[in-house]
Length: 171
Image: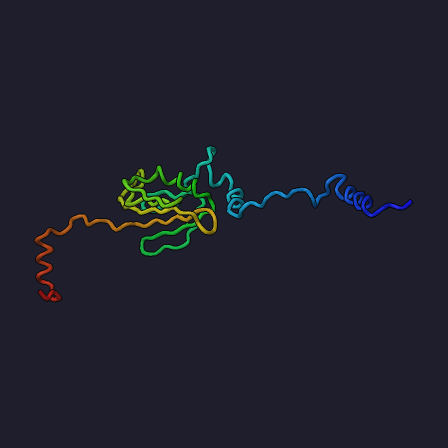
């Protein structure tokens, strides 16, 4: 008995396609981003039972910082942090804790201008707080302590007198 090439090819294709799927042909789960793994590893450490970020023991100018912020640098009143926590969760944390009349938004980023912490203790240092997506995943947080205004600013006459007595003044 001789089989022509066409039916033989058909039998080979059916044999290759039939049967139970093996381990290699089963679909693989998609890999999760590294930031998601970090948050899952931290799990209940960062979040309360309702899924909100918890306060840490750290604070800047009476503003309690959330769990999960990793410091990047501090320079002349500017504090920069990174977190693997999703941007949305970080914004939900800071929004109710900052009192300001100006919030600037660009894309997903938000900057709370000249804000005061919700319940400040002691001195009232105003802050510019910027929360933005991070190129490493998660979010970046930048807190700039704004210089305070003098308690007793000089009067116009005092400023004029100082200006006129300045030897560098060439008028």
